[in-house]
Amino acid sequence: MADDDIKVDIGVLKTQVLTLSAICSKMDQVIEKLVDQHDRHIAKVYMDMDARRKEKDDDVKELHDRIDTVLEKMEHSNERIMDEFKLLREAMTKHNGEEKLALDKLNQWKWMIAGGILVLSWLISHVKPDTLGFFK
Image 1: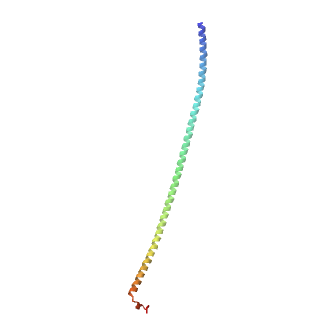
Image 2: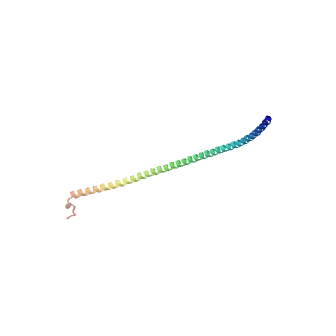
Image 3: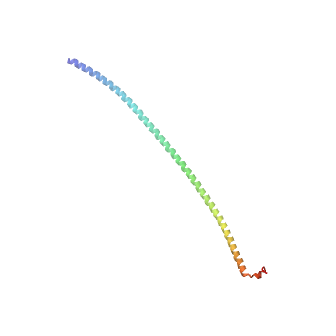
């Protein structure tokens, strides 16, 4: 009986080996599918990373362009402000010159009137009323 037991054990072992081989084959298929899925996932991750990098580069370029535009507008505004300052300075200088001329004329009239009053008061104080003939 020992031969029959060994044959049975060998038969059982053969079926178990066949079952294990079938299981290993199925596991190999599952592993291949998982590896393929993993590779697709990794490829998608890299594509997403590239798309995000491109979006970031585009955003940085757009931001740079906006900064350049703002700087150009600021320079233009600064030039306009400086031109307005120059015009204002010229207008103030012209106005100050006109005011100086007006004040000089006013001072001239003031001194002429003061001189006239001095001459008139000297004349009145030095001329006798009876010599004029007005008060006779």
